[in-house]
Length: 356
Ligand code: CA
Image 1 (cartoon, rainbow, N blue to C red):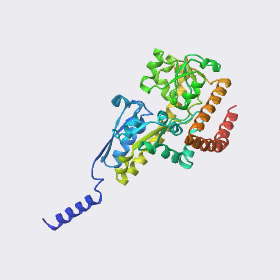
Image 2: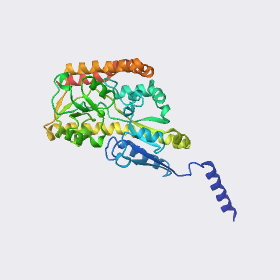
Image 3: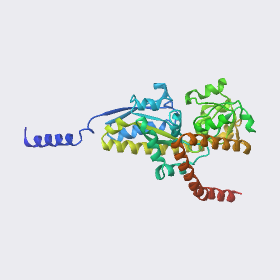
Image 4: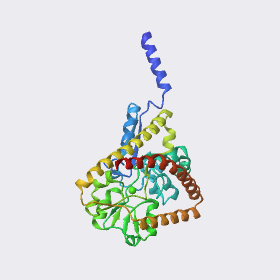
């Protein structure tokens, strides 16, 4: 062996020793609640996988599996907790049967707007509470993309009074479902892939899904033409879950890459969904003239707000952590809303005046 080859071999050995973990190929699997074609909800996992692969020169591979593959859209938390999947992408409020405090990290009825909620999460106590709530599941949690304020849902018949809600069978998840139940609605949660069929077959009379960008292509308007504005999901944040043991075993630089990719992909989803709704809304009146856009009348909204306050008070009375987060959330919202109204509300009002 000549001297040059010896030096090259030595340098190669040193490089390998310096990055023993990074040199090994890592293969993970991610299960998502959505069918893998259901963008924008299914966009963040695919983007994370692509970004992580690129940033690690193909050494860290995340295989994304949609609902069509694992068949357990509402079993993601269990599968990530159990380690069958290292990662998951879902909605935190789907786990309210396991812990009611998971609802705070998606959205709550009459709650904060996306800007307010992000401020609470990153610069208030939101992130701290999320860690506290999810610690017992053995998973780390990260924001996974926001839908913004959602539409209130599709109804077969017009809702004119609170009495019109009585006996209605509706798909509506999270705390909003409990609010509707207080007004006599038979509430159920149905995964995305079965929504249209359930509505078409009459298993349900009404449903809420997301907003025009996602709703119109699902065809709900064919069965239920009354499209209501929202009150129940003002800032729905999706959720990335990562199995703690798997994450802790990653090399430090891969941990940073993964966290950065999740944040970038989440922001992209917020923008992608907003843009999709802008386009869908602009075309809706012309392309789908049978869709009747409505806002719930004041009496219905007041009844919903009263029921929501009862639901919050009920949980706060029996769950100390709920009370703690609720108190913190409400206080932050009150403070933030003043600025939102000043900054955003004022600007929109000014533009309305100019348009007159
Ligand atoms: Ca929804």
